[in-house]
Image (cartoon, rainbow, N blue to C red; front, side, top):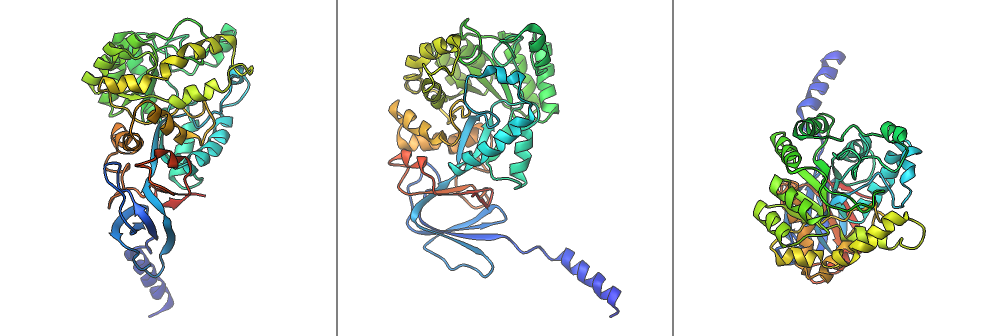
Length: 423
């Protein structure tokens, strides 16, 4: 065979033959496949090209060419899910930085925080509001393996009312106008348009600020901002596009309106009462309590971190957040895990588990909230949230048993996200 023909034949063979599979063999001292199952004995997990191939009892031999990870003293379990993070920001009360820092700086902070988050064991996060392209850039970078970080389900800019929480305020009118995100809306038609705009520009989920907020520079209450008609328009439009809606909501009547509009999650839920909880239960609306948000901001009280307006609101909600999960559980509301990282230091996400336990959740329920329950909220229950053949290889290892002490998840020793070992 002449040389050109030989080269052509070699090229064709290379195209026809599958590439060598990237396989990792994990020897685990115990495996928790999902929050409903008890730990196994020693087991071997095989991961190929980012997916779990098998989970079998005992330590099996390592095939030639595969990578071995030996964790005989660890419990291996599904990677955790945080449904409310802000990777592109760090904690602080310096609201004026919106006028001085470029959006690109959010990508720099996000790269740092994505790594801290995934090393803490959180292999999937729902990014709950950012500048137009910052979280989307991080989403792509972690998906393509260009930087360490979790799978990112990103909202982009939140929808807000003019002058409400989520809209720029606290500056001179002309500065507010320059800093406008372009995602405020008034009336059902305009709100539907902004949902479509968010979808067009790459949102995985629609975030709205349905009520006032604790950290915005307004002292006038935390009740509903959008009208019931506006909220329903947002929910219906998003659902028609295959998108879910997450609502920042504090006030009870705002929470009730969110649930009746068909919005998928209430994030925060501070003033939840029986009527609001009943509306959530009846409409299948899930609570994402973000207890670490209050923990984080409370640590800054009296230190000059926040303006007097914000400090007053923080102190007002402290006793309510201390009973939020208990109130929701008493009324049959489903609870999923979310922390509002960025309001506190990134990487502390797992401290939420102890706060949930303090309000009556069992260790098993708390773990489920950050795995199987959170996966259902994302409509990804066939992809993440448990360890099973065919699922994404999102796997973490800890010492101890989180089903009897969920706080062991505060110290994660090893993380694999989408088949990649995180370092």
